[in-house]
Length: 255
Image 1 (cartoon, one colour):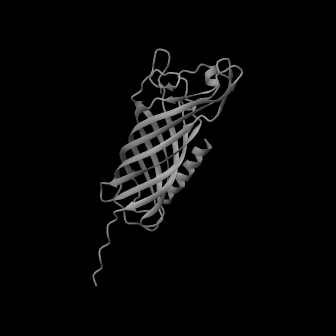
Image 2 (cartoon, helix red, strand yellow):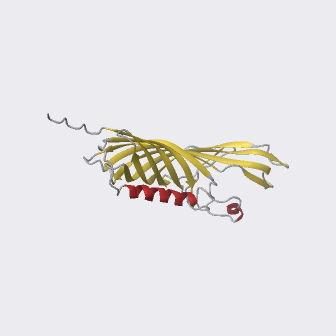
Image 3 (spheres, rainbow, N blue to C red):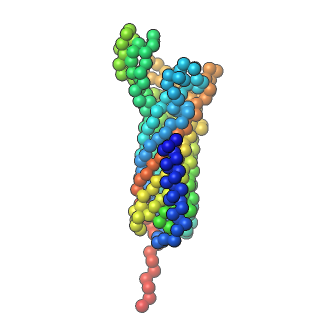
C-alpha cells in the first residue's frame, strides 16, 4: 500500500506541474518508451501460504509474491496537436512465490518455489493532456495477448518425502486488457523520462483447464465443478526513458 501511495503522490505532483507556465516544446509525431519496474500481484495471483491451503480457499491462488517487468511501447499521434495516439507495446513480466517452506506427510520437509513469466503484446489508444508542456500526463488503454509459462520445483526435501522434483507449466495464451496512467517529462527536444502505473487483467478471455502429469501442469484458470475461475490481475509501476521523433521543422525566418 505504501508503494501505491508513493506513486499516487508523485503522479499528482507531476500532473500539477503541467499547470505552471513553462517552456513549451514542439510536439512529436512518434514517441517511444523504454522502461522497467515493479510488479505487484493481486488475488488470485497472490494469495497467502499456508493460510489459503488450510482454509481451502476456492479458487486456490498461484501464490506469486512479487515480480519485475521491463519492455517498451511505441506511439503514433494521429492528430496535429499530438493529443490522441495509437500505440503498441511489448512487456516481459517475471513473478515468483519465493521460497516456501513445507512440512507435511506428502512432501516431507522441503522448500517449494513457483515462478511465472509472461510476454504481453498490447495494442490500444492513448490520450495526452499537455503535449507541448515539459510534464505531459497521459492515460491509455490496451487490449493484450498474454503468453504465460512457468516452473515449480521442490528444492530440497527429507523425512521420507520425495527426493525433489521440477515441473514446467504448459504454455498458455490468454487475452485481457491493460489500463495505464503516467507522466512524460521532456528533458530536451528528443529525450525525456517517463513514470507511470498500470492495472492489467491478463485472462479476461481464453481460460482453460489442462490436465497435468508428474512433470507438467496447466494454468487451470477456468471454472470447473470443484473450482471457481481465477482472475489474473496485477499492478505494475515503472520508470524509463522517452524518445521523441517527427517534430515539425520550424519555418525559416524571412530576412
